[in-house]
Image (cartoon, rainbow, N blue to C red; front, side, top):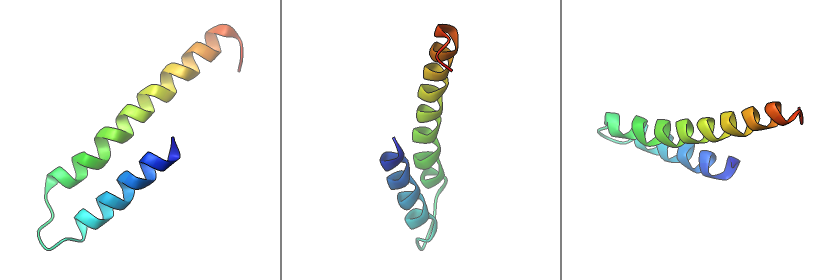
Length: 53
C-alpha cells in the first residue's frame, strides 16, 4: 500500500508548489491517507481478535 500513498504525496508536493495552491490539494492527499489508515486499523483489529499479533 505504500505506492499509492507515495503517489499521493508527490501529487501533494507538486500541487503545493504550484503558482496558486488550493485547499483541494491538501484534501487530495488527506483522503487517501485516511482511507489507508482505516484499512490498516481494521486489519490490525481483526488480527488482534484472532490472536495473530
